[in-house]
Length: 466
Image 1 (cartoon, rainbow, N blue to C red):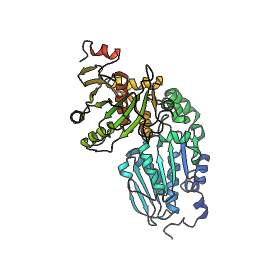
Image 2 (cartoon, helix red, strand yellow):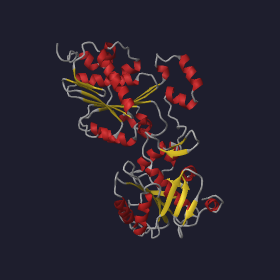
Image 3 (cartoon, rainbow, N blue to C red):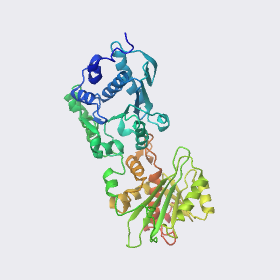
């Protein structure tokens, strides 16, 4: 018997859906359509328990059986999800009659004698670097895979002209999966599979789920509706309307015009696992209450030494596009104190902000203590009222949008609030650098840097402020 008894079966080679039948499974009509059509790029927006993982596993196994030397990658947001998806593929392989021998197997890897490999990976950029010439890339729970990871894996398909299949239930109006599904154009073949198209999900079960779940959650999980996440602080429609074509990137002009107005620079300092980020907001003096224009975003590479950051910030503030009296607002929380000292010694006189989870506001010269809630609320109000406008041409704007879309509020059992992107979400360094710059633009006087709004003056001088 040949090592792969199926290699000469022309009908099976052209019909991946028959693989499910060989394993004793009857594919649903949508599964059959998807597997037979074999699109170059596919987005599967599916209900829970609709068979999307089984379809992806069948597609992966079929590629491995009929294309010697093929590399098939299964990418999931977490290790547990990677194991589950791989278990589906391995289970189909074990049920396949006269299955060709595998020369190597593990918890996340299946390799055949003819060189084909199925490898399942958790969604961490450091685990996927190094793979190339991928024939098929499957992204499971794609709505939860960060944009940065999606951008990092796409080049793997460049040389091989491999195929990409992404499958997920909705996870809010945010992230690359949502944007590709709603705005990605005809390069994608889309499948929408609500629970009503799955014969294994009964009407009685759906009725019981509808009574038990919040309405938005039920519609997302079973009817594939993209909605705003319950704890999403910056809805997609606000971020879209905030982009203004009349706002240009600060350093895009070859011959910059003389600067007018005031520039506010927010600097959020990271550590080995977090980026440092810088945001520049510009306020024009033309109006009594001018809008704030976001005109520059910069994320420093991980592990950039702090002296290098100080040098780059100083060089940035010396650019002709920035006026003579920019205000620099720096996050002093955690590692920030020595960097603030370095910035001060370099002649930049920053405002050092310690961000905390309480309610008190205090000031001691250029040292400030501000509640995290106030910084984020200030950003929310600016977007809701249209007083913050974003330059659409900024190269780093998609990263900021992704951070904002995934930024949310959680409340612990003790009632403590936490504003962040979440343990499995993207970074939030750009969000906080923007919040710092915007807070400065709304609350610091351009001339003295010490003039607060009436709300802050009251809080600074109220009893217990410290």
